[in-house]
Length: 199
Image 1 (cartoon, helix red, strand yellow):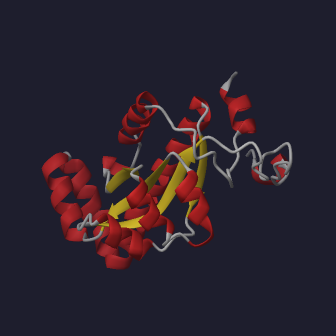
Image 2: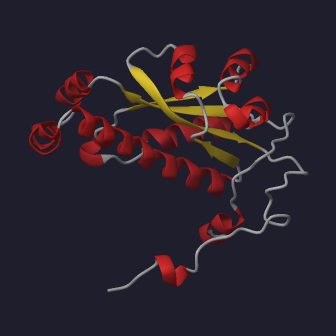
């Protein structure tokens, strides 16, 4: 099956089969794929936390609003976090990136102020979300991106002090009775000519 066909089959799962687990090999592959995610100036201001311990998933589920069941029944929850302090980010790029990249940050991003810096950093993390969802589709792994979580509580639970939570993704194997499956609820997108333009 080619990638287009895989993307046509991909959808946001609403109900998982709690008995079906993603293999350790596939989890390792997903970790390597996320580590290869692109970012502006190769900034990489992120952490990706893979959660599969039932106790920890239970705590996260209680901070997940209507996504509670997905968190509990999925194989893993991947939490996407971003560096909280722009000073920590600047230190990281100074230690790991070439001067031309550091200079870009200092002249093009930093002068815009802390709110703009944090927005820019968050945008980099969202790039990695696209990579993960595409990888899951290609690997036959079901997924659910989730912004409907209490991000502050996630951060407290995970105790990754220099980072804060932006969103999470549940992964696993869909339940046979998942009502969001395209055979039950057909995929709806705007007409291609409304969103794909040529000039």
